Image (tube, rainbow, N blue to C red; front, top):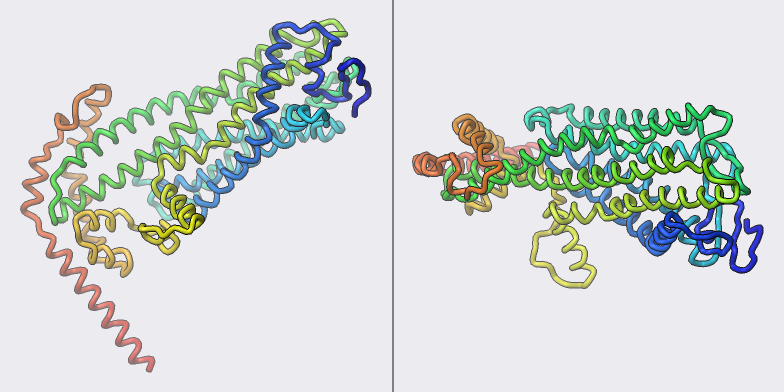
Length: 482
């Protein structure tokens, strides 16, 4: 690989960050920027790659086997985690480490795209596919979160979600085809580079550059995401005000209080899931347009072809290092995705607490998460019953699958939604106001009056009756078998 080393001046067949620190050229502003980015990247790239792959693998495992979330967000979460693992592996291990990481050990290694013509095309295809897939997945996830909740409870909704993910991957593959067709291995100023093939016209090169900027880097998708984020933020603020209102309702042992707690739990989970999607999407909407503009400006306003022959090699290197540093920022952001999932999902926090408690040989005082696995079909009613103080009925609802109890709870929930739908929707009025929750338009006194007229005895009687029937049925079936 190394063809010359004289007076600390390095020249390689492929581009390497070591050439920035030689004495065969005078450093300008661009060279200084490239040196700073190369130094930062060399320190971060190896540790970030290892941490990012491990954390996203853990996240994918939790969302696949341990956790269910409202609106089937775990399906989108595990898909995003899988794409992030490929993204970090490709750009971190196979692109950044040969250019940045090995320079710290005075070594140079060609990247995957610099071996031959075919490898250059495949490297460009896979790079554009991953860049486009991340932003397309964020777009369909945000669109799914903004759909009405009633439509997400259908039996075939999971199949529709997987179909959307496959469609997003197909669109990303189509977006990556123009770059793979027009790229190839070229030799200019004594260096082999994977760039626009000279056999294609410069006009086509500009069209492909526009296409990459708009669709692969996701500038058009980011505009759509910014508009949808505004809608998501308004809805999240509205949910926050409604949760504060419901939290102040007096709690009694009756079905209406049970319904209030159930709806509050559902809205709280929706609110936390919205924050996860909002954080992930905002990071993309900030990184992609800013760094996409940098690559766009380098190609159109500071092209390498305008430089004399002796400076072309250095300009190729400077362009390459600046563009890869922008991708490294996104690699770092993708590596810490587990952090905001951990900050918003209490189930992940409890799983980690249990894991580290067992690791440190400490006895936990919490429930056994391995048996529950957080995959109960109706957890909100059980939590509400525990809050009211009816643990026995809660066990019947969750473990014995009491149909009459669940039917009664759903009836009261429907009654609550229809009776107070207009007042709940009026919470939009205070979206951009700083009024306290006590001044909200929903009347808590009406809820208290209605709650005092209702009794919890019917639900307890139905639960005990169904439990006795189920036990009698099991005894009869055992006697018949004997």
